Image 1 (cartoon, helix red, strand yellow):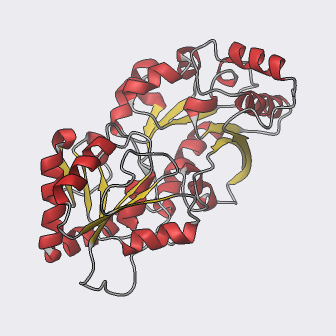
Image 2 (cartoon, rainbow, N blue to C red; image 1 turned 60 degrees about the vertical axis):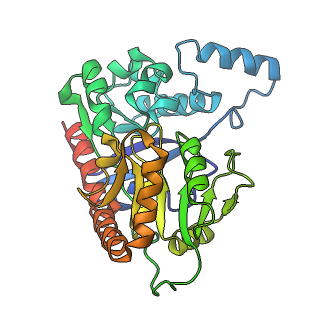
Length: 350
């Protein structure tokens, strides 16, 4: 028997073809699941109402429940899913970005079609961007970090919450094949902007200035690091160039203020990079014990010391990089996808 899976996902322009939670869909068993994806713009662009004043009034209206990230594109996606539920064209609905789009459908009659939502924000932020009423009406919530589980379980009960760690495309994101030359600066790469601790990175750059380090910062936004010695900001990269930067790097430098799953962390470990990051439960969930150098409180002096240690102890850097790749292979989408299949089967065939 084949279940018809209707997926709602948000289009993020900064994601490449190999990044993002939706990658697991390619690894679902096509004999068990027929997949239809509604990709909603992160905005109002694909909503048919064009009058600017009416659009703004409607957007204000749909955000009155506190879902500040909910756009008219999300409203259109939910309306489409509602029609599919009532027309018998869906056996299951999954919101891949619950913070953006899971507002109305979970609370509406839908002819017994189960609804699942994945959540990506830290628990400290979830309450400020979600409709509590909609969350409580979900058939299943999927957390990508153990830190989210208590918050979701309080509203749904532990039996309706699943922890499924984020995966990674280990076929695309992979270590460089040739051995790196020993000459040249020790290169640290930082990817992304959201919840990154650029203040700590600025202090690290100052502490390591003139000591043979270079910092590749990949983001389309201003960071406050521009113009610092050894800092190179990269923007509008295609997949190949992003991969090349990872493979040219000696370490992933990723201090964060908060986190759940982190694409940059997964991409970095898949490329076999040793990691210097923040001591947070959500980071620890994605790295092996002892496979990363984690610093409590993002102390810049301690972070800089960890980066120096990787430069000065190449055997340690290689061993941490080996463990990083090993952990990434455990989190490959091929291994993660069966967890989703189990959730879907428990609901669609119940």
